[in-house]
Length: 417
Image (tube, rainbow, N blue to C red; front, side, top):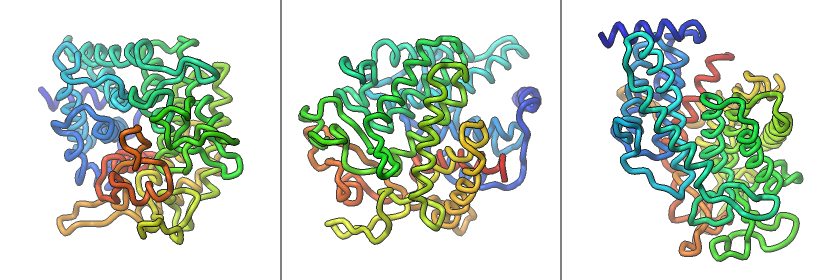
């Protein structure tokens, strides 16, 4: 029965998706690392990012045996977190990161709805209920800035009051947009709510001199939890550095939202303009290898006080590659950026992929974690030394924050190569 179901569902999806059975880096990475970040894992944005990439692989290759396993891994990830009625077993509020994993629910819902049409029963409602919960919590309960031009913008976390980080646009707004696309596409006010997040954070973090966005901005830089923020000047409230993965989250969020946002919405063109701005700025800082550094405005000659040099970093580079290639494909970036994306993808393979004796592959040179504050953790101060030497900053291999974007970049590359 399972084999019949898989065949029927795959056949249905083939009307809109072309299967490619050739060996790809997406396949190799999924077979090497996919299960490690999804099977039986907790509801977490990193695990969810990998699970989402596995579903994208299945969507693009619905008849391939290896992607059937990808679907099972992602389905297992969601089911581990949910009760049968779609309620969460252990959802932690006050953290926008915990919204991001909800992106896995939409494809599971659509596939289960198709199963329902064929067999009369499915788990579709479970996934819809879970998506509804996340959407309603984000829209109606999640803490927001209450004043000024940033009124209505989401806190990055409850423990970071009045702060917006670039990371948060992927965690919250990208899920919000995909929810609207699936269940409430004509809700103009909600699309405006999403656009407001991007427009505001870009207004306050974009440095036209460098063509880059600072990692974070605080509406209340005098707050103790915003000790890292500039207290005055042109970039009041901003952190000090341009962190690669922060801009990666931002760039990926922009193209993901624009994929679904109605083109006739009043803010659509503004978000396209911001996307082009990001693409232009990052192109200027692309290394000759095709990829990008942990700290975007420096190269490997930059040395921190602890002795660590700036380094080419895999998660940011994968996110940029994905966003360039997808941005061109969906028509929000000019075709000239296709060469930037292709160069970047080749750089990913050359700089970060290594092979084990058993044929599996690794993705190296990834920043494990980075953040700003809160007050009880003054070491996370947003300086260049922190991003290279911080106690929570380690350069690691096979980190989910790089694996998921690498798989998605590989899938986009397969569409254009």
